[in-house]
Length: 498
Ligand SMILES: Cc1ncc(COP(=O)(O)O)c(C=O)c1O
Image (cartoon, helix red, strand yellow):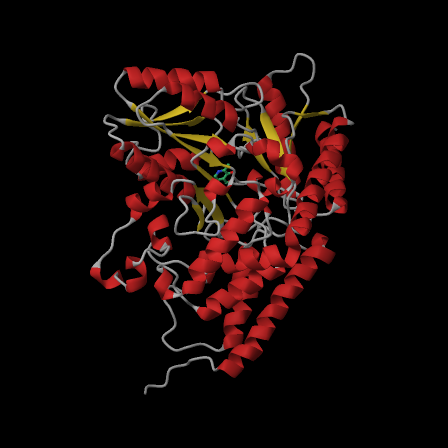
């Protein structure tokens, strides 16, 4: 036996405790001394790359040397997504129970591609997907229930909402072609939808590129930036008249730019009235906002979901579960499985032949990690009441932040706050051009991030307005961070106008 430098279980134990200490210290600093950590990395492109040698070491290195490079090489290039004043994009929550479950999953090192390759990976995931589906108010048709092999729906963990959109499209195509649909396929989503919808259509070969307006129709939105069902209906009817096949409508609950909410109900109504030979698949992308559905008072967001074919959201955004974890449910799993299933000889086994759930047939890759473990830990550690309290606190903080902005007449809250995102801009001075107001808001945005005290990102509304987004959903974000951020905004605005 050659001398292989395996870590012994005892070394792993000792070094593992040290690593957990390091993570706990990091979280403690973020929570108790956030001012000591600039939120955004300030390295320049290529800086980290240049610190690393061109080739891997020939000889194994000392553990201390490896760890030292975490501080020397890695940490300067880290933007602190878990910082309580990270308000950019949508957050990427993590939490203690989630990270510990991930560690255990990595320690087990199992592959859950088939039921037979580790039955617990599949069956815990099935139960947890039912738990979460019920918790967000999905109808039973989307769940496995007590006779999972007899049900027609069910949920699965995908890596991302982008993959969820892709598998929804592939399932939709399967159903359409099996139903006899013939002709060029067309996908519909709003101008405000996430780019993953157009990208999925391109990856699936439905569109010829990521910008293919003939195959992916971007439907107009109303004043609240929600898809206009009448415009959708018009486009679909015109396509049918021209011999094309409306394949899938992707409704967004909580758009990335502004958390606008498409009406699932109104869109489903148009699909029913369409009278197409095969009803287009209705996919709901609630990547960020889906987490809010654990609270009954936010169920209005998904009104009509019982008429959708699939629904997804990302607990890795706002539900305390670290990346990656997108939960995807469909009530027509037969369409999905028949589109995705392919069984080479080396995967044949008795359990599959007997009809168990094999999650490889629900996703693009074959292999799959034990991702449900972290979700299971999160649901059990916090409980649904704990998760509701968590969501409600962020919404309360967002409302408080909105009130602060509204009380200062130099600023405007530019879009309706539906939950935890507040979009703000400097108010136009009398007679000021849009370009000039935008330039002032952009300058403010730059100085906020340069201050190191927070990270905020922007969007541009259909009317050309440049806005700064405050997404309040950090695991450790408390009132003091939100109020502190507002004080910095006011100070920087003072300085800019001086
Ligand atoms: C509404 C919406 N859909 C899809 C996505 C893409 O998510 P993912 O990174 O999981 O593919 C996002 C990301 O922010 C989003 O906000």
